[in-house]
Each structure stands twice: as C-alpha cells, then as structure tokens.
Image 1 (tube, helix red, strand yellow):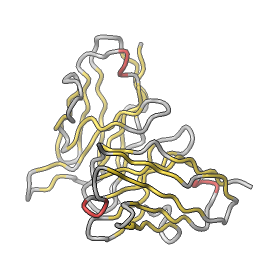
Image 2 (cartoon, rainbow over the protein chains, first blue to last red; image 1 turned 90 degrees about the vertical axis):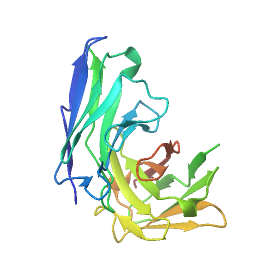
Image 3 (cartoon, each protein chain N blue to C red; image 1 turned 180 degrees about the vertical axis):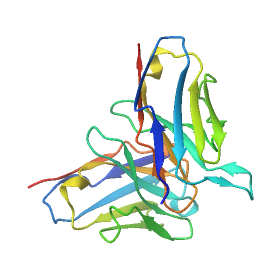
Image 4 (tube, rainbow over the protein chains, first blue to last red; image 1 turned 120 degrees about the vertical axis):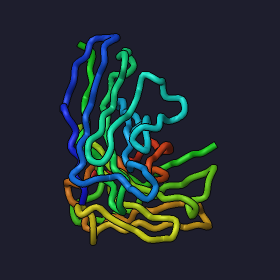
Length: 113
Length: 114
C-alpha cells in the first residue's frame, strides 16, 4: 500500500505571505501511459466535509481561487498558497488515487501567525 | 444538482453491527466510483472502501473482512455494512464520489462504545 507523508504537521503563516505544504508518497503515483500524477489536495474546515482544491497534482478545481496551486511529480508534491487569506485557515490533506486502495496524508494544520 | 446524503450512524456496542446508507441524487451510482472515508474525532481522514462502476470492491486493511460495501442501483444508494465493530471504528463516515472527490456528504457519526 502507498503511504502518504505530509510536512509540516502544522504551519503558521502571516496574512499575505506564502504557505507551502509538502506531500511525499512511498511510491510513484505517476502513470506514464497518460502522463498524469494521481494526486489530489483537499481543504477541510471544522465541522465540514473536505473540499477538493487540486487534482491530477496541478489542476485547480473550478471555483478555487488562483492563489492555490499544486506542483510536483512522481513521489514529491507541493501545495502552495501564494498570499494567505484569513479564510484559508484549515487542515489540508493530500490523497493518492493511483491504485485500488486510496490513501490520505496525515494532514497539515494551517494557522495565521 | 448533485446531492450525497449519509444515514444510519449511531451508538453501537463493541462487536455489534451497523449499516450505513449513502443516498445520492443528480447522478447514478452505477456510473461512478463511490468511496467511504472516515474521520475519528480530532483525527485525520482515513479512506475506508471503494466500489467501482464495474462492481469491484476494495478495502483498507483496517476494515478488510469486517466491512462490506455494496450498492443498489434501483435505489441509487451505496451501503457500508459494518460488522465486528471496535472502539477504533468510532468516526464520522463520509460518502464521496469518484477518485478525486468533489462531491461529499455531510457525514454520519458512528460511536462504538459500551
């Protein structure tokens, strides 16, 4: 089974500054046959279900602000928030959907400094 | 409009059983991958199970042999039969559509306690 490891576990960033969350998979989630990375990012706020932000590692979901971006390939991925807003305080999860068993990272709690 | 609504949660004793339902509208469950994902109180997300559109099913190691995912196409509903429940199965259980899930329900709380 693929293990997803996020870093850091928690992060405090000043408003307007950049926030960067990393996600590493124990094996590649890249399919060469279609040139896609099977990696998604979610945002979860208290009392709410997760919200899809990014899929295929770098495709932004419709309606998600363009300050959110995803990058990386193979085993190493990054979610970047270019200019942190107050409403971005949440827990962020990466998820692989490469095989038949999907796995989430442990989550990164993002707060305002 | 797509809607996903879970039900069936509640308090159950260790060793007991519970069946969760995920009723959907706005799409047909037989045309999509459907997942169950859970979240223990104060913890992260844990993927539990999936039923693919061809009917094949897969489970996390933590629930394999105890949980069964199924669907009723006539009712447009997905189920999670949970047997031999343990305290560590206590969580909010979410139903979510597709591999990368843009549609989630609000979740149903399962509490396993004596």
